[in-house]
Image (cartoon, rainbow, N blue to C red):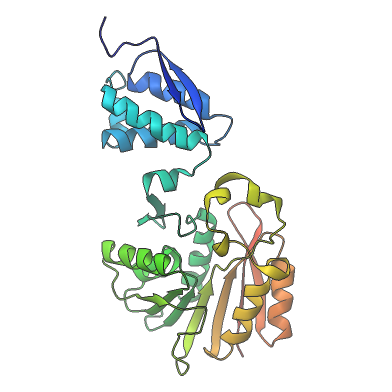
Length: 302
C-alpha cells in the first residue's frame, strides 16, 4: 500500500485529540479539517487553507490547482500540530505570525493585540478628515503592531508620525513592521501614554486604540481575546480609565483645532462622548464600524 494512503491519522496531546480519515491529499485535508474546526471557527475552511499554505509554503491558488497533491509524512505532521493549536482556539494570526491590515502584512506576536478590520474604520475616518493635507503631526498611543500608524504613513509619506507603546516587545515588533514595510519615517518608541513624549511638542492629530474592556466582561473568556495580552485589553472604571486619562492629557499636546480619535467598545459611544464634552472638546461625534456598531469617537480641541 502507498504510504501516503492511510485510513486514518490520529493526533493526540495533553490538550487535544482528534482523527483525520482518508489520504494525505490537499482536498481531503481541507475537507476533514473544516469539519473539525466548524464548532470553533467562523472561517473553518479558510483557516485550514491558510495552515496548509504555511506548511507547503505555497499560495492559496496552489491548493485549488493541485487538490490531489499528497503531503509528505513530515508535512502532514506539521499540519496536524498547527491544526491542534487552532482547534484549541489559538488565533490563526498567532499561529502564522502574520496578519494583514490595510493591505499591509504585519508581523504579530502574543505581546500585542491582533489588528482587526474594525480598526480600519478609524484609519478611514482620519484619512477622510485630512484628505489632501500633506503636513500633519500625528501621535498614535498604544500602537501595538504599529497597525494604525503604519497604515496612515503608507497613505501619507510626508506626515510626521510618532507611535508609542508601554510594552517594549510591542515597540520592537512595531519597529520591525516599519522596517519590513519601508515606513521608517514613523518614530516608534516606548512610553506609558504621554510620559516620554516631548512635553513641548504639539500634534494636529492624536489617535488611540487603548484598552477598553471591563475586567468582568464575559467576552474575555471567548474567542481570540483569550490568547491576547490582558494589559492591552482591560481597563478599570468600566473600561474607561485609559480613555479618560488620554483625553485629559491630550489637551496639553494638541494644537488649536487638533483632533482626537478613539476606538472603543460598541456600548461605550455615549460614555466617551460625555467624557470629551465634559473636559471641553467640541464637535464630538461617534462613527460606526463595519457591523454598524458604535466604534470610533472623535472630537476637536478648541
